[in-house]
Length: 273
Image (cartoon, rainbow, N blue to C red; front, side, top):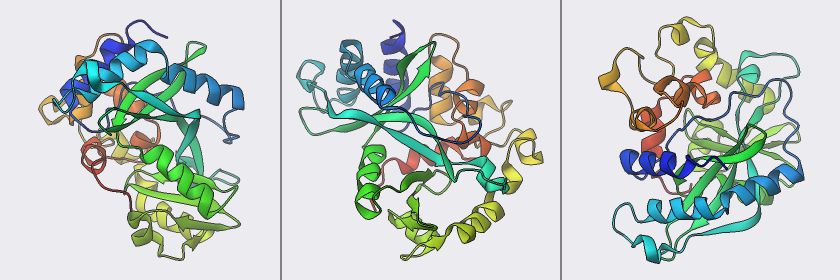
């Protein structure tokens, strides 16, 4: 694991507060999403459970004084990490054969001695799996379980623009939370109907669009440094090659579909739908 990781995560956690902190995620995957191998899931879990990550988690859980660093006693739950898929820009654009969603990172759930929960986001960098972000709550692992229960063998994915979680399979897109119910109804929607909805909502915000070229994708214009969302400001202060641009651009679907960093920051505090 990168020896600078704890400092990156700690600085972001202290600067950004108890919300999602976008720190240099891997670039969007190209082609079809075949999903990570079992070995990758295990390796990502090992990175999340590494001693230096647990030390950073202790500081993260102690950031607001709820528990001391020494007493936090963080633990990573689950044998493996879970793949986290976001709505695919290619699917939004209507490309033939495009998957509805693609893996953006792997997530592991961590808990503290006082019951706090956090999600560790892990990506493959430089030939190894590394934790690049800590976010409050357990949305990623929670909805993976909910989706598997609702539609075994289905594909669980997130539409971050409205903070909605779904499971797709058997030609249907089924809602997993209240935001998704508002989008597709309690009974869900056909894949074709869902594609029409997201195309109408986001097709004009894809890479290469006037929206993206204007600098608005991600919720802020790069030249307006005073208007940066908390996540971007935190990334700008971190050591290493992480910049405001890379912290947002590296978030894949977040930038590609024009998600505001502030929207993510606010919505992480919501309860499960």
